[in-house]
Figure 1 (cartoon, rainbow, N blue to C red):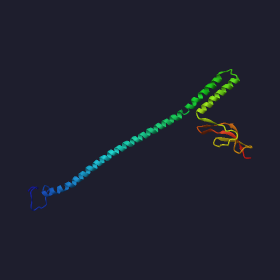
Figure 2 (cartoon, rainbow, N blue to C red; figure 1 turned 120 degrees about the vertical axis):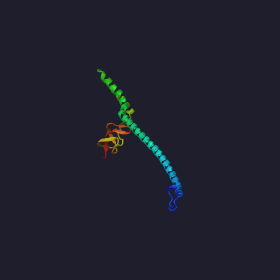
Figure 3 (cartoon, helix red, strand yellow; figure 1 turned 135 degrees about the vertical axis):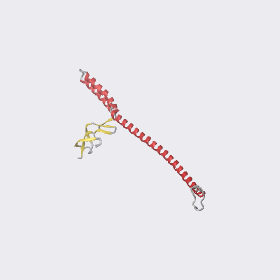
Figure 4 (cartoon, rainbow, N blue to C red; figure 1 turned 90 degrees about the horizontal axis):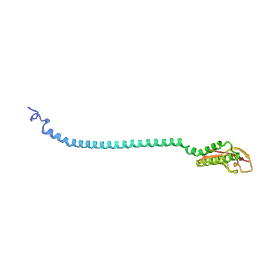
Amino acid sequence: MSNNEFNPSNPAPGPGSASSQSADQSDLPSSAADLASQVNAEIKLAELEARHAEVSDAYLRAKAESENTRRRAEDEMAKARKYAVESFADSLLPVKDSLEAAIAIPAATPEQLLEGVHATLRQLVSALERNKVVEINPAAGAKFDPHQHQAISVVPAAQEPNTVVAVLQKGYLIADRVLRPALVTVTGSA
């Protein structure tokens, strides 16, 4: 007897029997649903992987751009530090030229030398002003400013206390920052 033949004494169906086929067919809708959900999951996974690749690419590009920006800024800062004095040095060259011209005249009269010194001083003052270096030269009677003045001595005087009596050495600002405070004599309390 073969496996496909009907055996009345054996009620259990075999693999090729009609009852076995109906049991396999009842599994089909469930496996079709599983297959559909698996396909949907694979599609969703592919979409997420593509999105991940896009985000990763965008991140790497943004990171590279920020590194390039940082490097360019560092290069510009290095160049600014290196050449910051260029403008100032350029404005001082005429002063040096004037001093060398004065030395080159061996038989200059004192009047000629004094005139040359005044011209050179004007050039120097002009060069300093172009580079935002400004004098601090308080007038007598001005209020003492500890941010711009340095008191060298205190003298009793009829003026109000803490006022400038005399300037011993001018001070200088560079772009609103004190380069050197003015050295002054101030009044003390009587």
